[in-house]
Image (tube, rainbow, N blue to C red; front, side, top):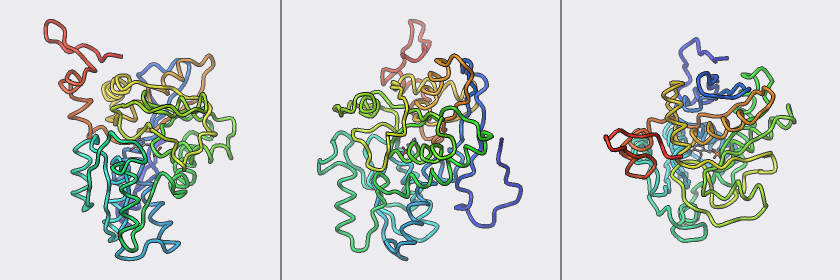
Length: 341
Ligand code: PMP
């Protein structure tokens, strides 16, 4: 079911956040299941994080932590920053963002164009290191008088945005009938919020984690033990710690997906379904397809297109980049072969 906006919206761009459409996957092999994707890339800031930015800023305004003219600080891989930059620019707040250096250049340029101050830091240091992006944000928030540290990793307004908007929308759009929802964890806001909502209205619906290989979360879920994180190239999901705002107790099962499988699934999504999705959506859809193909009875499964692929055109959608990074290879004739999975 597609949501149509029949009239021009006169409340400005922030009124266009949420109410994203859901579309069915028709060409990829979904086994006995039906797979639906919610197009969060259609939010005005381009990702699922617009909802969270609005929710965190409005909650802070309500309880007086954010007053006119004050500064918002956040540690972000990009999309939360874009959402915050959009909302901050509309509402007149100064915004400082701490961004790890592995993030796509297009995201950083977009943030700056929206008026945010961006400070780049190292991607290769763990939590507790002085150069870790979240530690820098926390320090800065303590130094700047009246600054508000949005802290998506510990802010209850993050999962609440998904509990009150993403979850109910998906539930209505699927006709109150969904067997499994697949999500990744960056902050854990999506999986926690959607999971909390569905637990109330449909406790039998299974929440499924899609985790990049190298992230600690799938292993933690299976064993309760925290291993040392590896590295991965998918952006926006996978963690080296368990975010305090996440409730992994809601998650029934997990799939570990390699970068190569995420990238090839994202490319299949564009080629076969016409959906230009980002790398984390590749991970989510790859896990959702695996879940679907493992089923012996028909099920209704949903996942998210978390952001748009246009930020990744020079990376995973670029054959030369894939070859240079070892995800793809040329044969003797120079023809690019399939992605290595
Ligand atoms: N995909 C992308 C591209 C993201 O930027 C994020 C947020 N970091 C997510 C997925 C994960 O969402 P959440 O923070 O709700 O776990």
